[in-house]
Length: 262
Image 1 (tube, rainbow, N blue to C red):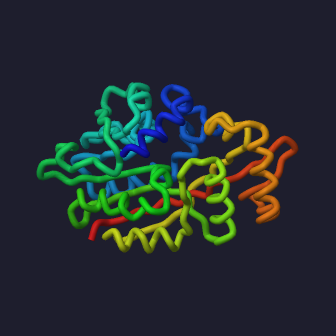
Image 2 (image 1 turned 120 degrees about the horizontal axis):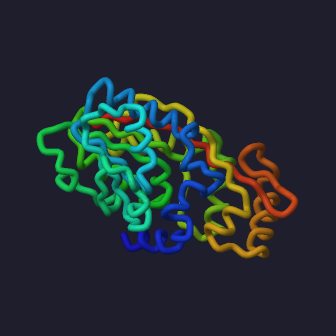
């Protein structure tokens, strides 16, 4: 929890009302969010929940998209985030706001009662690092009943060199974030008590060095040092790490995992 608060403090300039513009508007784009919203609605339509909670839901954008697509939805929609700035920017009146961590939220906090709980999450797992990933996947499983569903979109890679390159990038930016291989994440999910029902790709996220420099307070020398080190270690990795005249461009490759509690 303390580490999470440190991350929130460091990235505070990207939070709140400006969150939808970060990284070229990735997290505020209806088109980019559509595959995740489709995956969530597929479960909602098949097995309607009493409560749908978005863990690390930020400004409530994703739940807002759910409402836009299903305005008749009777489920309570709960936007869970540890950042007060993110929650303050959540203006949709039908969304409940709950300041809590994805790794600490309790079923009773969501007031599910005897109803069915469904969880969703986007781009949160990496905040907990390599050592914390399994713990974070186990926690929502501990709060769900067999058969309840967890849909999350997480950055992960098919090839080891891609994963090592991006993890080194985030290590050099001193973020504490970590990204797995797709197969590694499937293994961790199984170990945490989740059955992976479906895995589908989601749009990649472009990370150019100017936007990373703003988000993580990187100076020009730090950007150039990262550029040269990663080029020296990995060369040019198409659509993963590419040099640019004044820095570099990198991409996070996302996948959507629909999981059922076993």
